[in-house]
Image (cartoon, rainbow over all chains, first blue to last red; front, side, top):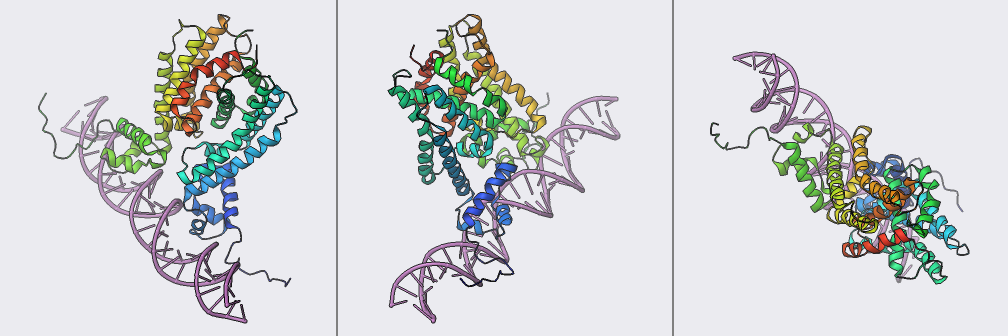
Amino acid sequence: MVRMPVPETRPYHHGDLRAALLAAAERTLREKGVAALSLRELAREVGVSHAAPGRHFRDKQALLNALALTGYERLSRALNTAEDPALPLEPRLTALARAYLGFAIDNAELLELMYARKHDPDASEQMAVAVERTVGSLERVLADAQKRGEIIAGDPEELNLVTGAALHGVAGFIAAGWLPPETALAGVEGLVHHLLHGLKPR
Amino acid sequence: MVRMPVPETRPYHHGDLRAALLAAAERTLREKGVAALSLRELAREVGVSHAAPGRHFRDKQALLNALALTGYERLSRALNTAEDPALPLEPRLTALARAYLGFAIDNAELLELMYARKHDPDASEQMAVAVERTVGSLERVLADAQKRGEIIAGDPEELNLVTGAALHGVAGFIAAGWLPPETALAGVEGLVHHLLHGLKPR
DNA sequence: ATCGAATGTAGGCGCCGCCAACAATGCTGT
DNA sequence: ACAGCATTGTTGGCGGCGCCTACATTCGAT
């Protein structure tokens, strides 16, 4: 390998501008919110010209979509690793819930982006796949539980809806700032318990 | 009253510019989404100069906050009228849920605005009041049910959280476009039922 | 009737997203 | 080795936006 002299000026080509832009975007998103995201500012941070991002993202929305996609990837990975099929239903679901809420706490703005209803038809394909993969963790847990007789029979879609909605709702409360993170995490067990056992006296 | 000649040009003062701006903003929001909202465009629609809105809203966020506030007013009114204290718990809760989801279906973009975590400290006072008044409907229903022994005793906060989260979650699914409105409305009864009776076999 | 407060207008500044024209670099087939 | 082409980056510019300041008109209290 010939020793390359470090150029006085950075090389003409960045090397991995796309990834650098996404990383900078996520940092800005986390620190200053989505409203502060501008392609020109990102370009400045990364050290390229103001039109360079256009080579990697057709427009601003495309970058936001890509950002949301990385979010889904991380979230579904987190959910999948949190879920232990060996556990009985209640702790298994609790672990899943804890993972989801933890992600919501650590990535509130990103989550908001992931929920946003903006996706142009081409992007929404990948988006739908990502969402499905994410929701899949929950579906699997409930389907297993149903198979084992740990929960009632009946349309799995309905069970997925109640459970998913409850988790999604709490995440929404967190993201909106209506629920302090500690309170949310402290309430996870009770939440899952009430979901499984209902509110009516038995 | 002296008969006023209709001026060739509209009068210098609009009369109720603030309300007109809010109305136009909500129409644009509904038809083209929040991204298409611009103060200058609103001013053009209403027929005033591009700086006129600044007299009524300190900045764009202030207009969005005001819009969100009107949303909370309408939502809490809808919830309060939907709720009939004479009914037993399950139908009462179902009616409340139906009202909330109906609002979410008809005002998806507005709801997204209402959920947004942007509110500067001064605005968030009124906002918190509005949220509390909205959530109050649900809290009242559950408190009454608890008093009547229709649901288990225990920390009301926890019960409010599960129930509220489930409703909020479904509304989020609707707003995100993941759940078709008909499916959501069709599933309301099952949702409430599962919430009250739980997923475990009894 | 007057004078200050409220409301609307005109113009401008800096930023933004997006586009077009051009420059530098990497890659591939011969 | 290198020519030719696609890729990736640069510069400059256009129109739109939010926000600000200075100025004009109208309203309302005295």
